Length: 333
Image (cartoon, rainbow, N blue to C red):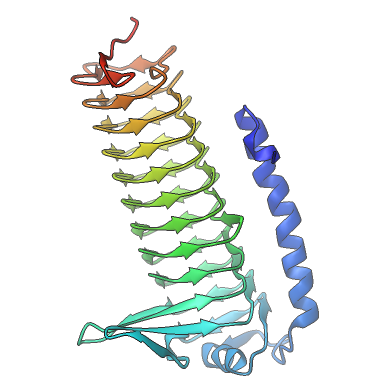
């Protein structure tokens, strides 16, 4: 059984770290060897040259480069898959380390007639320690290899609605999202790491589907956070995180252990009508707004609220919440 299923948060966080140590060095070593990059010693490179490199079926690896112009993957050859959708297959690895993108990075387009074009990356799509001056539009992308967006700064909006990440691990670690982020309908088949990530504006994960463990420990959410209708098939860890806006888990489903320990919540937090099969721990957290479990279904365990602090007029709502499918939920004082 993988170490990922250890029973404590330190072990879980340690395994995310070990995974990064294992995957990322191999990634960079591989692409230094494979790349045929002729612009390795230039201070900048045109986005058009990167597209041409992909057309030539050459792996893309750039380090310490300024990328000029819009990097638009949708200009590559596409094939029709339905009456209103076309798909682009990128069969080379795409990796950037310590690069700066002056314009948009685009892998999704929609015409005036409503026809969409999206991109499938059969190998990795990796950005490490990069700066994005404008938006990232990765709506509906499919990434079969490693997806990595670690220690980046993103000034513009991020769109990953309906994206599919197939790798054993996907990383958003320590990235600063400075505009709105949209992860609605995100589908992640492996484990996901948002450790120490900062969201400066609204973050939406409505209807997101996580097959593996999800790590949001030590994250900062400066505006509203929406996880309504999301599905967490394994562990969800949000320990030591700061929530400055409204937090919405309405109608979400939790099949693994959920830890919301030692968090600071400045506004209301709702778990309205959730379904949860394992324990949810909110111990030592502080709530300045109300905490709601109205109409929640706890199939095996009551929520843990040891040493929780409710400030001023805040409190917990358990109206019509149930335990074991038939017993009204009661919390110990």
